[in-house]
Amino acid sequence: MSLSDPASSAPYPAETRLFIGGSWRPAAAGERLPVHNPADDAEIGRVAHARAADLEAAVEAAAAGFAVWRVASPPERAGVLDRTAALLAERAEAIGRLITLEQGKPLPEAIGEAAFAAEILRWFAGEARRVYGRTIPARGGAAIAQSTVKEPIGVVAAFTPWNFPVHQAVLKLAAAVAAGCSIVLKGPEETPASVAALVEAFADAGLPAGVINLVFGTPAEISAYLIPHPTVRKLSFTGSTAVGRQLAALAGQHLKRSTLELGGHAPVIVFDDVDPVLVGARLAGAKFYNAGQTCASPTRFLVQRGIYNRLTEAFVAAAKGVVVGNGVDAGVGMGPLAHPRRIAALEGFVADAVAKGARLALGGSRIGNAGSFFEPTVLLDVPIEARAFNEEPFGPIALFRPFDTAEEAIAEANRLEAGLAAYVYSGSIARATAAEAAIEAGMISVNHHGLALPELPFGGVKASGWGSEAGADAVGAYLVEKLVTRAGL
Ligand code: NAD
Image (cartoon, rainbow, N blue to C red; front, side, top):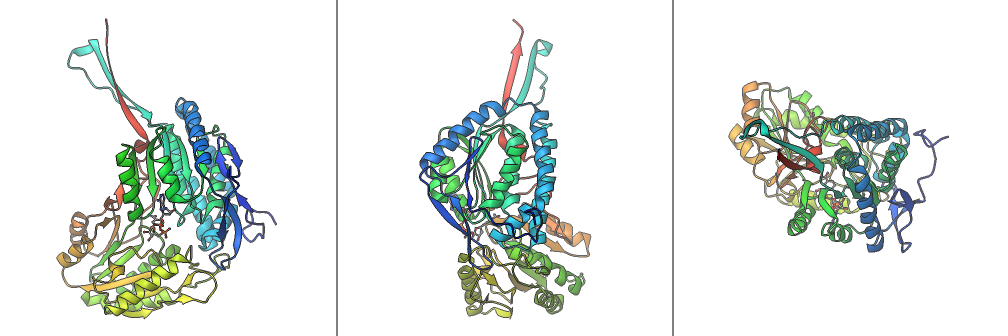
């Protein structure tokens, strides 16, 4: 069987190396970190652990890559992105298999993630052709020409997490490449091989050496090295709000531009004019996707009192039907959590909520002793003081509370500092539009879960971050504007 067969037993790479200046290399000091399969805790490979010498080499390579790529023509940049897309589409099954082995999600979801990266690359290939400034009529008439040009900002330091290893990385890589930047990406140490396979596709598509460099190591050490580095001009980070705050402070100190895609705590407001059985089942599908390890995951379910019992019963029934297991097995709907530290975090959230008066309607515990499996969990009547109602649970935990008036639900939706995604369910256009206007969130999805498409902006407000990672403004985050005003002599 070949690696491209999802049922293949082709081995996981023994060592995922650093990609610096167009070549794959071990860490200079030979250090490596173990990579585990979260379905059985087995060590499946190792990843090279970069230290200062490797990071300096990566920055130098990125500086050289930038000198080449900043002057590459728009069709040249678009061509690389289009060819990378074609390779991703061809390799989606093999890359998906790597994602499942190192991250745990069901194989069809993992293959879907890799295949969807091709869609994202195609979108950015189009955007690469549309990077241009404007002409501004001069006060002094035709003797003066005024125009702006958009130039790539320079070398970017990027940090991406383990929940959607390929998706999170491709958004940053594709935007940087489209803009003409070069990039040093710190990939997730938990899920390195799929990110390396993505970077390999860029290289195979003809991206010049040094434009993309990939490192792994100790996250705090790498950010402390790269962000203040004088060659680095921009930070892009996806991860928790707590870490985002620290990195933004460091970037601010060194006046580096930042794009931050941070945590969410998405409210879901369900009004009593919907079918509770239909909506309850649909919400369960959305909640347990990727075992709830999604920044836009629906989390605080606020349900109008008249349908609260029927909707929560339908949700629990659907949650009971979620098949939890090893993501490589057919029919599995939810894999393990991506790493063991999430088990302790989720157990803590459940115990705290129950102690404060929530009713545990389903789950609440780890499954078995091997692998990081956790039950689909439903907590009802959760008090707002519960920790899970305030901190991002980032796991398969659904938290329900009834509400009476729209004002009450909206006040709860806006109570937290997070402002990433929000969801509204209602059969009334008036109720839905009033909620859309009042909710403080970067993205609101009404009566469906329609986020995260390449052409749609993806980003948060308040403490959920700065900037957008997709849509028409995404490349702009990697550009600076230069004004040129020219008169004849
Ligand atoms: P964590 O806060 O330790 O790490 C989150 C991410 O930030 C990881 O990818 C990690 O490598 C990176 N990171 C951590 N410290 C860093 C530093 N000093 N410099 C640079 N990068 C650093 O938490 P975790 O246990 O890995 O994940 C749990 C929490 O992270 C979740 O509760 C969730 O809030 C958040 N998270 C968010 C996303 C997202 O898509 N926005 C993705 C993954 C994790």
